[in-house]
Image 1: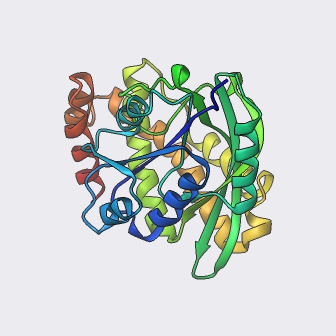
Image 2: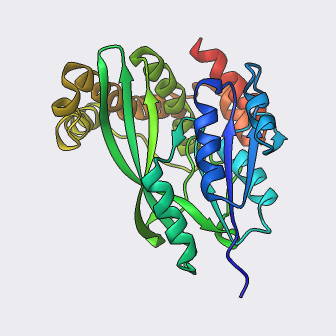
Length: 276
């Protein structure tokens, strides 16, 4: 029996500060690695080329479209693993992934634990952990180009591996706040297209502030910066319903039209311009 081939990929833009560690992590566990470059200008492409990684240039049209490009490039592999450009594997996690690979897996989807690290001027702390599907058999790696905000393979069908992935997700609270504002609008546009109705923002704000700050332990591990980040993410969950209500009343017509007509490149340009 031929050994199982694991393909790996990363989608990146201007990610020079974190991309090298991500690429090295993929190369440590994968038989083949692909980098989808969404238009980098900061030398990130050189990091890819120096490692002999196959680079595919694809203008930014969202995670769904970019992941589809990567999945098609690695369709000849048995399984596919992906990391974001600000994620990496510690040596112990890489060893566990190699052991998983050697176990001859046969299920369609496998989940890992992503550990979100806040690396702020006030200190470094673990903000939260989340189960995510990051390993898919190639015939199950199905991505929808209209998936606007985050990757979403069905977690309920995945086998848990317990393998941790490290994520440098916050280095500046203001930058996180601006990013979440963009994501809130993208979520609202997608929700409107799917016929969802807005919910009351205030209860969601309070519930998620408690969830991130207390239940997930951000306040205990990060103190006041942890609470501030928890509030940012709670605000995101409230804000997306505020924006959904605005869209239902006729707001953001250019963005709504771009999504309806499948002009995803235009859509992201509109959303990015709005956030400036």
